[in-house]
Image (cartoon, rainbow, N blue to C red; front, side, top):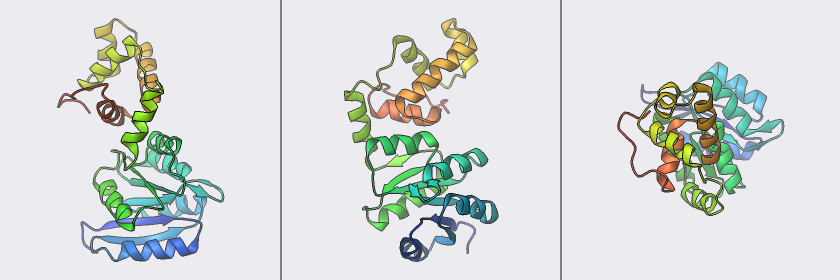
Length: 217
């Protein structure tokens, strides 16, 4: 195992999928499957023990969901890549995975190369969400006016894009910091985002923003 090797924990309640996908990932020269788990509880215990760089988890598990794993691990670490696999890749599932803090979302009907690409992305950009169907899902959400922002929320979004924090945004807009944080929370909710970076990327993709200032985080 080299220093730049991507270590992986694979979570699925079907042994055949664990062994099959695990064998595929292990064939990649820059990847090593450290272990597997078949449930949420096993996955959390294995993560704490093995400390993998990337966790690949099925959405549906017997004692919970892959999103439970994502939320639990994301609270522990901002640097772990978290990928959700599912047989049901609808818009709601995509947004739920993004809001939970996942790094990527891949349908089980996708080729194994998509999982490999997602794992490599997650290892280097764990908090930047990628999904092949994200743009289409956001356009459908926008057409339903789910992402319509109020004028004040749009003002806040523009200042978020400039890299300002809640206190600075409130000062510019003559709002209290708590009111500003409420606006930010609603923006994240409407955009299906878990953090500033996800909100800005989504806003650009659906046309709410044209550019993001280099200072934005």
